[in-house]
Image (cartoon, rainbow, N blue to C red; front, side, top):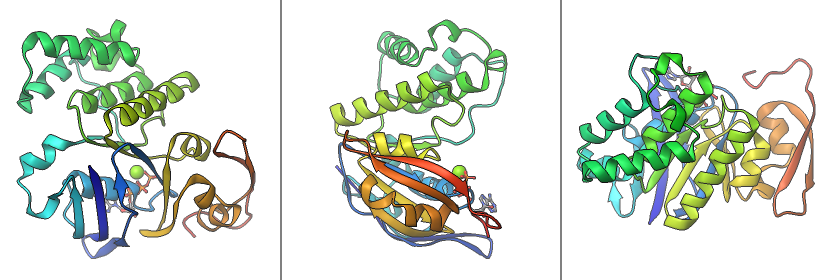
Length: 263
Ligand SMILES: Nc1ncnc2c1ncn2[C@@H]1O[C@H](COP(=O)(O)OP(=O)(O)OP(=O)(O)O)[C@@H](O)[C@H]1O
Ligand SMILES: [Mg+2]
């Protein structure tokens, strides 16, 4: 299992968004953090990888070339948790999970599907909300439903677009622990767009730093999260230290005056 992303470029109208994006080869069992300021192209790259947005260049996973594959073959392997959680409708999490699974024709019996849904809800702390209309759930709980909808597909490539942005501290860590365990146990690949550099450093094997649609750096958290790279891209002064646990800690000192990440 290996994700290959080479020279990917794409545009919205005549505005180029991604410029020749090449990622290091990503083997199974690897969590990659996709970093970069607002509007740097993280979600756009996720959409290209999900097969939702056309792009130039090469994307393949597990020897399936996205451009040449049947849509179904790609969708069988890849699941996305989008940046926006499911809209607050009158549907319940349980109804959404069943309709998603059946719309995708997942090859699983009703009893196995029921057990699978129950297990995912338990892992994500959603069991007590399983039968509550989505519009009665908090933003964080709806975000967890978004993750549940990706997990029910049992993907081999899991694309997580800011999976923890609305979650409290407990669930931020729990969700990333869960993703980490799944990736290591099943040998799948996860790519997560993240704004929290400390969480990215702690949970990701590799990081990729995007700015204005260009790759600025990629490698281990120690290689990517240098004060120079962070200052260049986010326009903040930082101190980076070694936690002694195999990953760095980033202390944000101050935003640099007169600059924004979009300047
Ligand atoms: N549907 C769209 N039509 C036109 N432009 C778009 C569209 N979606 C995104 N863009 C533009 O593409 C660029 C990259 O946006 P993208 O959503 O990929 O950034 P991002 O890195 O995910 O940002 P954020 O951290 O805010 O989620 C931005 O300039 C954005 O305005
Ligand atoms: Mg985004």
